[in-house]
Length: 329
Length: 277
Image (cartoon, rainbow over all chains, first blue to last red; front, side, top):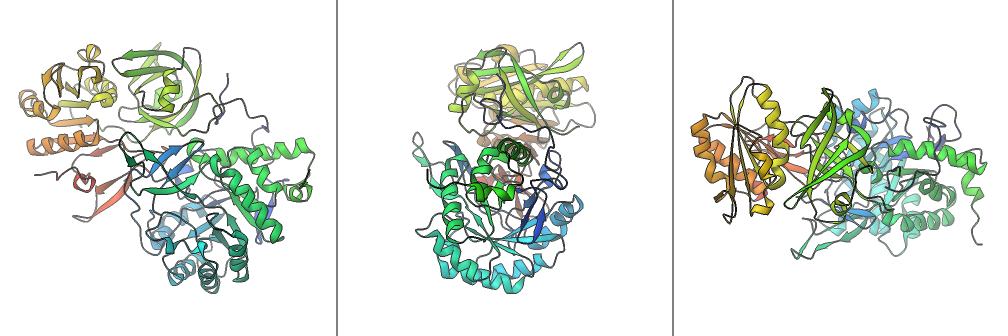
């Protein structure tokens, strides 16, 4: 038996290598005014700073690289163990380890620019002011095409830093970032709220050009033999296929309530069919996260598979998909 | 040294020694590039469950007509991933990414080397010994475990180096005690100038301390929980002294390690004591 990356049967939708992933293809999309060759991005925190993947993937050929979140000062992150596998997914508590915005601009960004990658820089901060300072520094770099404002990392010391749990706090950060940065801004939100649409409305009203849905879900796992949490940080963010139905629901809810707002969907995308689910319910693009840990070429393979899906469905372009979705029976 | 590749490998066989399994897979590209201390990220399971890769150090490289053709790695069954690996039979396929990480660095000139392994941490020392002996080095192998059944391949270990010393915590095989009890005498008798070690972190801390006390260089291959093996998840970090004195930074073991200078790891930060007591 042949193994695919899910360890099962061969992927049913497999386009010839490279098919549809370059040139004026049915996969090209416009994301907040930025033209991308495919709607499949590398998700923040799951692609390092891009350099690590350069031996596996042509960085210029993928939709965009969303960088690991960058903060004003370097961050060491959490103690180990930082990860544990869970059913159909994993928990992580990395704690936003990153070299800080100056080192990022001096070392990591030039590499991505040289490689021809379209860069979405992920911004994180402990206050609206800090977000604004990082955003201003990043937006001054021509290689940064978009900013993704990480309002929702669960691996922070205080829940108060998860700005996306409070519409007003989230809006305040977006207002500050928008006034500091002259590039389009995506607000990355969490599903760990009662009313996601309310948070989405608040950040769009504050100036967000688009949304990234969703971040990891706050979770916890216990080693029963050692009677301890499996993560040193006790709790962590759940990712992988386990959260995909939650993410699809979130994208559908927000896209339905706020038509026309660009959404980058992320949460457990492993195959082209997974990506198609999100595009059908209204996402403009998808970001592949945890799957890149298993298959370094997952971002490319999902895009190639999506081209095959469009052909099989007789759909001309990826942008046609939301209109073809049939809610109800 | 070429970069890592992903190969869908045919399983050639599965062996068993004590609590450890060893899988041999046909992987010519991985085998050709593999050096001791590097590891493979193996995707277990043939069901439809999403699983992460598991990291295992390269135990041995097999040749066919003089060309590297196969790799072996060893594991103990600890959870669903290693259960799935233990169930693999000859002829089945396995998805392998490797070789990953940086290997052990050989000494510049032939010298006496002490190789110290704890449990199945001894696995990469088999390949390391081959590399070192091919360079004219003397190799003394010291392996330890809690009990005899947790010793890694004790029967085959005798032929790995120029000498073999075994310790067990309970005395059920070899000398009663831990590997560091045996290190000073072995270093003194062979005139060893470099220690290579792989095993649990607490053992590595003690080995690094013993090597430092004896004034010999020490390279350790560390083990940390890992999700990707390719440097993108930032899970498998260890604190390293590097650069400014007394200042540590978190280094990814998958791409900067897993082999580190034993004196560079901030053992105290890991709760494993100071290098010099």
